[in-house]
Length: 270
Length: 191
Image (cartoon, rainbow over all chains, first blue to last red; front, side, top):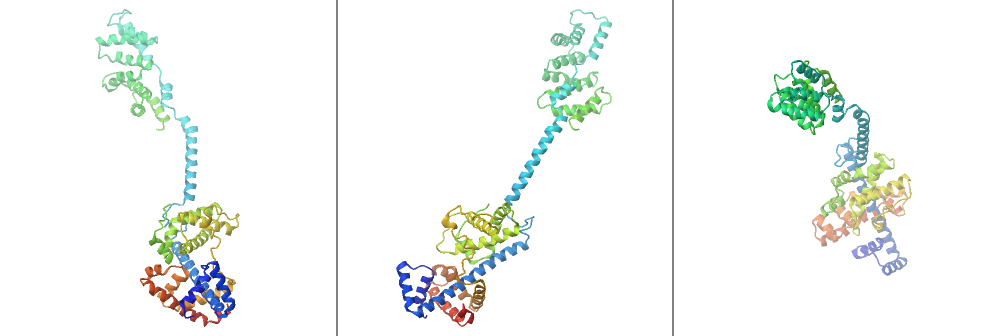
């Protein structure tokens, strides 16, 4: 057994690295040579033993890594040491989150959405053409001696009558004419805004109502705020401005629309 | 999942059985295997068992000089683990759906048995561990590299810093010494 080539040949045979002819020769030789057969058995056991120890060491090293990670809570639910998210848990969490989002969406759509009116709905629910003051004004103007003639100065009365009759285009012409001569007349400006509002020309109504809401003296200021707020519900991007105006009105006891403003704010979640 | 680049440095660490290299495999691939085990209603403990076995097979294959890893490490480990788990759990017929050659060994997770009974195997293991433990560390390393890991003289020379010629001489000298130690044992004679 001193000869490395001899041992090497046995190892070649045991590892299956011999060709068929060489293997056959070796086996014939073993049959005839008891020493070679015994040495081959010894080498087989020796190599097997080395493999067993190698496998055992490898298993121990892997188990050691497992234990080391276990000590660091790697296998616990919290996965403190994990460098990667658990795809299974992640998928479950995503599924749960998705289901929750859908559920919330359905609840919102089915419940919250039903109780939160749209801007259009808010406008429709709250807009009513102002007639009380316009009728009173027309009466007042008639009683003050103005006649139903088509003079420029008297056209306010005519305009208000058109307005009260729902003839908004005629009222608009009359009010425009009146405002040429009385540009600072807030009554004419307010009702001109109302005619536009009744004809769904909201942007123009906003232009006319806004200056009145800034007035310190106009008796139409609070009414103008109310309608301006409603106008903003119909103007793109105007919802927040509407909210702002109704918030002001809701804290203004002088406004006849204070409660209505509070109602609008409540309905939109304030 | 971050895929392991099968570079020589990392493989060398795995071949050496470096605990850090194993932990890296755990960090990268354990959750994948755990997911698979969960899908079959297994537990984390089951996953730990099967992952250890899969790593054992994986590293043994990496140590085989004739083995060339042609798939991703994750694919390889997953396939081994899945087949081992299915077999272990008796869930279904073992599946080998990928490269047949790459995975044909999977059932041989513990192939080194010879004709020994479990008791004989234990005796042999204890004897050889004892005798190998009596060798100098460099001798034990050369024997392991050569006769267990199947590394070439050149690879051993690179790992140990010896010349190839010295490795060739040393491995037979060390083996001879080991042989003498075990042949003197009654256990060895009776196996």
